Image (cartoon, rainbow, N blue to C red; front, side, top):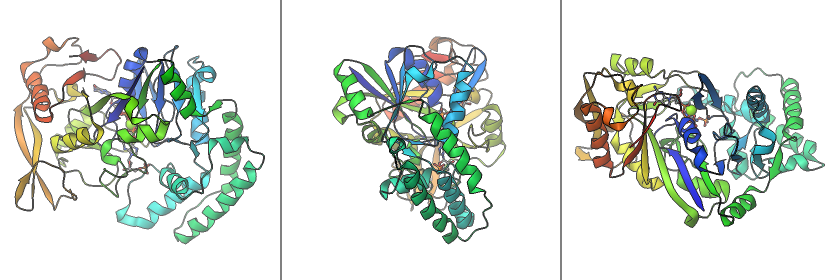
Length: 423
Ligand code: GDP
Ligand code: IMO
Ligand code: MG
């Protein structure tokens, strides 16, 4: 029996999809516990790139069961497109993908509300993916939401209409010029709902706890990253769910004492998409070089990701909040060819040097303190063993391990499944 967690430690897009896919053969069940189609998890193998939004990244392995937990929010319209993409690859989705009845539904009006809310904020906008995530979680905690299980009820349509009507007046309240054809969006939504019904709905907390009793192994797949957590992230520039370890307990019904390992995944540098503070951001040629080599464009919105040096203040904070037991470092290959590299180990804050994350990390409040490391020139992407790495890359890895106090067990040197090195 094992329940292990895999979580992003920065601002998302760390490479969670790739690593879940790599680890899936070791597990019976892969389960997503929060977030929704704001996520874009990329997997690459056999020369093909797949991007998953709501479906767990274990889906490509024949023997795995994949669960969408109660903590996830599902947009039926996005979801059926995802299913259609997977069907092209002959994946037996219907027998291997199970959905919690308690997962909440994203309505077309949730997406519209997201757009209206962002437009009304002007410069202060969150930079949301506009997938309706915030409004759907607001309805969940506000006790108004519709859940997957409601689709099976006779009065689903009435419930839908009551909620959509409420949303319409809320959209008006935002007083922004939003053009939309709701009838069209609703038609698309109800067509998708019919297709969604072909999948198996389960009481996932019951299913998962029985699996634990039967000695099955489970990997919980996080979405977003710890700095986007609703409680511990850079609020209000965050998403609307708990992306951190505790979210796996509430988002799946896994009791805390059943969690064993916590895998924390991070990029060898830092990226962020959307608004909000980012102390080590590089608004210069170096940042542009990282973005270009690392192909840092969002897998969901195509937006350019902001890039900067690795921030160990953030990393240590995320390790602490999640109880990370093993670190996985991604995209080290992107740093090949930089003469020198900077690693942020502390912040100057109110005249002092501090090593913890303060309440406020806006640029006017914190100045990063860097340690300089020598770069390396070698191309890492074809390397298959730790011993092949240049001394400077090993020094980079070992410095992080000594600062954070947690071993780095996997080093990824390219997007493909095979470009994964165990240490
Ligand atoms: P996720 O949301 O955490 O699953 O990450 P994304 O898929 O949004 O973004 C990670 C991007 O980096 C994807 O395009 C991956 O294919 C790519 N990637 C993952 N690991 C590596 C790596 O080690 N090196 C390089 N160069 N690219 C990687
Ligand atoms: P994965 O799982 C990166 C960011 C958005 C925005 C903020 C709020 O692929 O790592 P939302 O749509 O949730 O209201 O957006 O969070 N964001 C992500 N950034 N990766 C993600 O997911 C993200 N999901 C949301 O850009 O700044
Ligand atoms: Mg992503």
